[in-house]
Amino acid sequence: MSTFTSVKDVENHARTRMQKVMGDLTHAISTIRTGRASISLLDAIRVDYYGTPTPLNQVGTLHVPEPGMITVQPWDTSQIGPIEKAIRNSDLGLNPMNDGKLVRIPIPPLNQERRKELVKHLHTVAEDHRVALRNIRRDANEAVKKLLKDKAISEDDDRRAHDEIQKMTDAEIRKIDDASKAKEKEILEIK
Image: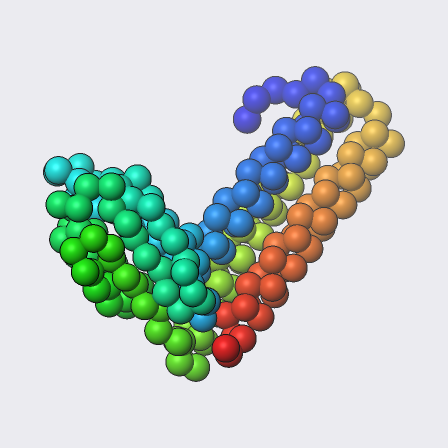
């Protein structure tokens, strides 16, 4: 860990790291499937584009024309086969179809068992991010203790800093819980 000269430095560093955790959580949650079609569902798919694994959104235009359908319009129609194969081989359980110009991906409704699996996965993702926040809190608290030990701050500053770091952590954990609850509601919602 880098050496901090003030409590403000420690708090700012912790705040920046916590914001990165929240950004990562937002991305991770967006890739979890719901009953509704969303192009972020396909973020993890890589297409073999002339021997190079390329993100799907870099070989064509993705659209959601209706809640139960995603379409991929390849920029190079010779890539329809590899695009279809990449989607079919993903662990998303999707069955793409093509008409020679466009790949249509029907998003089947989720059954209750699959919804429960997705919610369980969501809870794991949320808990991993809570643990990351707690680790940041621990690092920040250790940095503040070191400042106290080196007599760079008073005991009052030490107490205030620990309280502030705890408040910051609690606020971020609440954000994780809120995001997780909203996504869970979306997953369990039956259209």
